[in-house]
Image: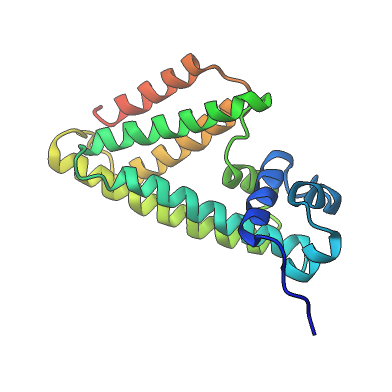
Length: 198
C-alpha cells in the first residue's frame, strides 16, 4: 500500500516554478528541485514522474496564473482600451521590479522558455503557442474596445497591433532581465502607447 503524501503539492509546484524561472530548464538539476521543494528525489519522481513532466506542470501553472492576472486588467470595463493596455504595461514593469531584490529581474518564464526550449521541445512549444494565441486574442479585443471608445486611433490592423504589443511586453521583460532601469523601460512603454494613436 502506498503511503499518503505528506507535503503540499501546490507549494512544491510554486517552489519548482521559482527554481526553473531563476535558472532555466536545462540548468535546473534534480538536486536544485529537491532543495527548493524540500522533497527527496523519490518524492519528486513519484509525484511528478520526471523533471520534464514537472516542468510541464510548472509552465502550465505559470501561463494560467499570468493570464488570469492579465485578463483581469484587459477586461476591466471601468477603463478605456488604452488605459487597459497602460495598466498591463505597468503590471509587467512592477512585476519585474519586484524581482530586482534577487539581484536581477527574472523576466518572464514564458519568454525565457521560448528562448531556451520552444524550438526543440514540442511540449513547451505547444503550451507557449496556446498561451500566445490566448494573449493575442485578448490584446486584439482591447484594441477594438479602444477604437470604439476613441482611446486608440491607429488605423493599423487590430491583429498587427496585438502582435506589436505582445512583442513589446516580451522585449520589456528581456530588457529588464538584462538590467535596463525603470526610466528606460518607461520610455519604451511611452513609445508603444504613442503607436496606438499614430
